[in-house]
Length: 101
Image (cartoon, rainbow, N blue to C red; front, top):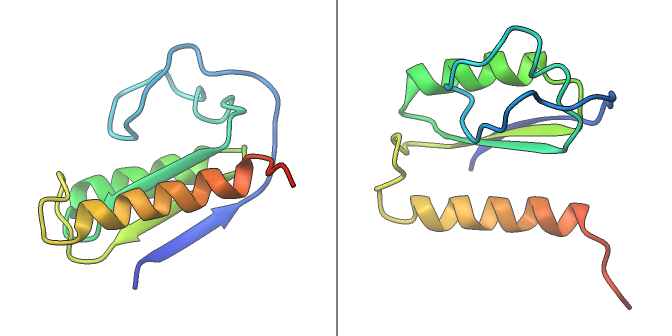
């Protein structure tokens, strides 16, 4: 079962440049200015990137969640890992997007 942490605090502003990776160097403080809900998914066996994602999550002031796929490495090549990533992303977006009844 994946581990996760969630925050729903919000703040205004926007990131000066888009990035899809918490491991990408970006200017100090710009993660804190991100206002879009952010999902971080990392493999539990990728300890370096996991630490970077934990640091990134701690800087975010927008709604965010860090999900860890146990035993998965950087590219989620293990059996079932990529499917788990898709499931986590689907659940995240389903929780954010309005559903027409």
